[in-house]
Amino acid sequence: MLGGFSFGQKKLGNETKEQKVKRMEWWTDARFGMFIHWGLYALPARHEWVKYREQITNEQYQKYFDEFNPDQFDPKLWAKQAKAAGMKYAVLTTKHHEGFCLFDSKYTDYKSTNTQAKRDLVKEFVDAFRAEGIKIGFYYSLLDWHHPDFTIDLNHPQRPVNITDTAAAYNELNKNRDMAVYRKYLYNQVTELLTKYGKIDLLWLDYSFAAKGNAPGKGKDDWGSVALLQQIRKLQPNIIVNNRLNLGEYEDGADFETPEQVKPEALAKFKGKSFETCQTFSGSWGYSRDENTWKSQRQLLDLLISSVSNGGNLILNVGPTARGEFDYRAKNALDSLADWMHANSKSIYKCTYAPDEYKVPDGNKLTYNANSKRLYVHVYNYPADGKLILPGYKNRLKYAQFLFDNSELKFEVQGDDAVLQLPAKKPLYEIPVVELLLN
Ligand code: JFZ
Image (cartoon, rainbow, N blue to C red; front, side, top):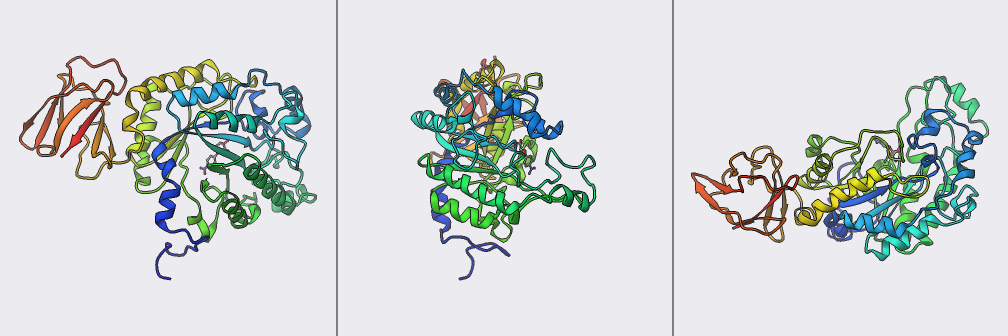
């Protein structure tokens, strides 16, 4: 066969390009999802990497397992909050790097059903979000800082003090550890997650990393990535999988890229690819009590608009507290998104980047719905006199209106341009959206 896959790449299944587009359609249309990072790290409440950062041993970390008691956990409320914010899918950490499982796995005792919670939190999440019509995603950490066979590498809490220490130092630390045993565990748990909870729409596996000098990294062979992906596709043929598995020559077998904490200006290079920007409300994924760099509504909207205006998705993270709630800062952030999405979601769902011939008026950002032939101008820079110049739109514009109330916006042709007359006084919405119906 000629073509069908890019240079140097091997194909895993026999899905055609068209079938792939169809399989990914709901995700491409959705554009906006919720990430949920929740685990024992909510108790220390100082970042989900606390065990690594402070080089905490399993014994020292045990108190968080013993004290885990999320008495306010109400996934139906979480689902309502996600839905109100306009998020169409949600991805929960079924296990993060710390190794604690939020589900009733038969392969470990280190799980929520053995804590005071006594609940399969994953099952309740799935039921509640599905009931709200939100697509279900599982995050599963490839790293595991609790499993006794997971070999110590540069990202492990028990790494040598100097992480670039000699290979001998790592060998000594790893002499009783066997990645083959862990690999089987990982395979078994992913199998459980994909067989016990019904249809799973998305899987987010995290992550692979290169060695640094003598300090080992982890990738393809450690995870058994290719066999794992084949198993995933077999169990859930319609699932969408991210690209952090390190698939080598099978890299095209992953479905989307995951630029993380990438600045909006840097997203242009992903144009034309399937990508999902993942971002936090503040500077941590896990609940971080004293972290105070919370993004403003405008910054959050910019992340969403910038993702869609480059043809990608945004998944925004909430880190619930140890009691199982979205704290007031997260609630405020979600509420502010809900307000905006209530008024403007037409410029987000099923939208993508605008064709090149449509120029962005000065500092503003465009999205485009090819089906309805509508272009959306996100007015970042509100013109002082209300005159919004659309460069080169002389013969292109049929009708214009604000999205928030469908009120008409009149325009005049001046030379090659169309000039829209917005109200001189800026409407109260942050980043109002103008809908342009094109000829
Ligand atoms: C990972 C996790 O370590 C982190 O805690 C969080 O879950 C996040 C979503 O994913 O962090 C990464 C993983 C990969 C890269 C950067 C951060 N990367 O490839 O640049």
